[in-house]
Image (tube, rainbow, N blue to C red; front, side, top):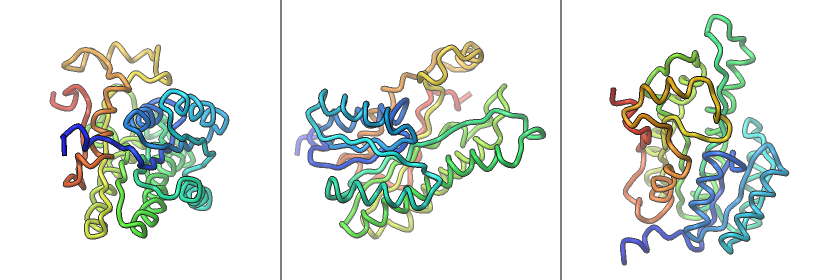
Length: 254
């Protein structure tokens, strides 16, 4: 097989949580561009459906928008059931939904801590295990979790203990699931982005600080995550499981 053919996702069915914007939407664009049908799951149902319609028109694939709260076991299970019924199977799941609350640890409330952990870590666990059960039954699949370079380092100057802890947890959860499911043909990997210029942080007052600390002296672009995402989703990465890919412009090297 030609190496480029191994990167094709033609005929694959791909689920993306947090898929209506930012990094998640770029994962979905990569999958659609490679020929996959996609489901964009997001708390914003309207935007998820709008972006799904755009992908369908742009790439000639089937795309649907699904409303989901990834902290709800019932809603996550309903999301996976809907996709399995609508598209027939779940070949790839990008567990991507996440938030950050930057508050000094001594001032952070328990509700703030719990919200970050619930969405960033518990939400990944619920989505990965729900999708994983379908993949195990169908004979295999690929799960890709969005971690962060913040799972490897402590970012400065912003205080984000909860976010850092949640993303470190995602990395270890990824490795644990990869080992548990190695014999079931379900691969589990994570991507740890550095600072990415999504719409959510455009104009942030700390951008000059972050770029000043980066060897590349710039923010990453969302589309610069698409290559590794496609590799992990496709047959090009069939021997890769339990890995965390840091895509940060060498930020964590210094």
